[in-house]
Image 1 (tube, rainbow, N blue to C red):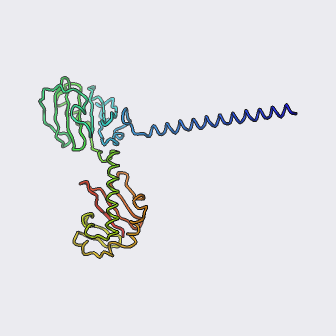
Image 2 (image 1 turned 180 degrees about the horizontal axis):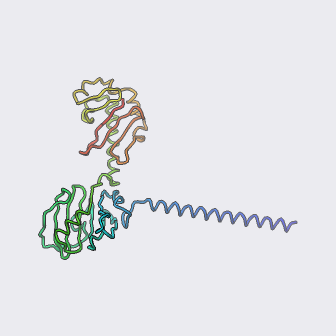
Length: 290
């Protein structure tokens, strides 16, 4: 009987070890899976990416018309702050690049072998400079935020260059850069703090330059211009219920922000202030639900 009891204990202990080992294996596998998922979700800063959409976090969108039969071997690559689309057009190697940090030959990644002569041209309305290299043709242009280069590996004719230019597309996504979005959010919070102070102080004068006109108010009123705002009763504008919503200690932390970080709402779901980042770079109040 004692022998059987000892054997049972041994079997029980071995079973515990097996279960523990199996649990560790499962946990390890889950961790690997989770880590793998995290890795794929990270934004690539160096290497091949799937499409032009993957350039957005560095503020660039460049692409080539893959539907054209002459366009083949398209590849998308990120090299730090440079977006690269390499392809062949009717067998000729071409490389399109875009960056907000680099320009000219530093952007293109090729040596300047031109004689300095340039042909002034335009690409989609932007002024561009076309140079002849030894060998190759290269074009530089900028949209004000993003600089671009188009390098053709052979000394193509002007007509061939024009045909290639027709196949490319580009667009500034500068405002969608991670660092720009973070900066915009910080500036949005500063403007929200200003809104809170102005409403708590019931300061109509300070509010004048913070508003977009005409302005819709939640109580059925509206103001078409500064003069109408000045004639509005402070009690009608700075209602107690809205001031309470804005002065809540969690108001800033619970501020709602749009995905592109340009539209903000501070306050409760019913009593709040909407403001927006305008095209000129300044924030303005667009709606007051008071």
